[in-house]
Image 1 (cartoon, one colour):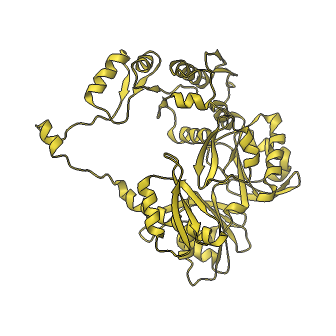
Image 2 (cartoon, helix red, strand yellow):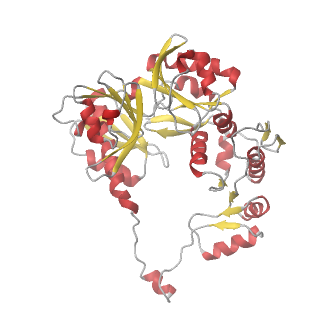
Image 3 (tube, helix red, strand yellow):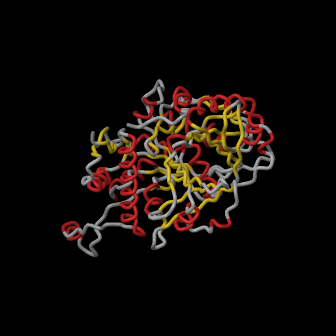
Length: 451
């Protein structure tokens, strides 16, 4: 069963969209508002507050702590000064990346490693016979990421001048409304930003304090969608990606709108996004959604070009709307030449049509190509092997945690094939058992202690 982060009691009632996703066994908000444009806008122009507590966190200490870490990662950590953070990948004996994350140097011989995937077993495997203690502190520490050009002003009001000399990839200790915290100048949105780390028992008081100090600066809770969009924008650069829009009756039902028709909401969504990204003042009152957004400041460091907008459409009316308002039409990911011709007729406009066409690969004979079809397995850069290794590490990590705590550990949702990999990997252990629960696409595997 998915669990809430240390901030969940505060974030849960603020999630108007009810859009949650699984992240390392935790519930993580995809977005707090039904349409998360303002969450992205906050990260880009004011300050967005993001709960990143599901990151894995390990405390590493002992005489050989530095030796173990230097054995694992690709950076030379002997050049790593106190109160300094480095980003680094860690690799296997063949040089293939296992995962990546950050390493903190506390200056007293102890370190913290953070990662997106479980890494405890990998560290322990490389620490055999060495004098080092590795402790999983993932559930003990809550983390908030404060990202955006106003983030320093918010934190200065909250924590005082301790931030004034904090350099990139450094961290410091501070107190916010009586709550001891660690503040690092880190994040991955491409904007000015910080991450605030707190013990679980102080998490809710920290959240309240940041929202209080952030209110005059227009702080905004932001979910994974807004953060991912900002990261993609920073990585892609101008003119290098498109926006794809799709809607459904299920989505409209989840958003609690008064309509179950999809054409109006699609028209509103495309109009609003184009209006906001254009950078000018935008005021729109649609049939389903409305928007009132101020213009970007003349000196704002922000893109003002609107990327191409593609509309996902299978029904004839939605395809016709794509031809009217879109730069492209996205059909089902796998389709046929006949359906492409059908779509072209419905779109009735000279726009792009995106699809994957299934056809015979036989040189001359279509029937022979169908009858003699060959199963082709795509395994880019050894992905299947690396994915299986990662699942094994994740399974071992969950098994150790379940056996140690005496409580079931829920993994993220995964396909039936990947669940089988985990089942098979753990089936010979006598201290844990595995079972699946939930319904697709959220069906996930649980590792439970044998009592």
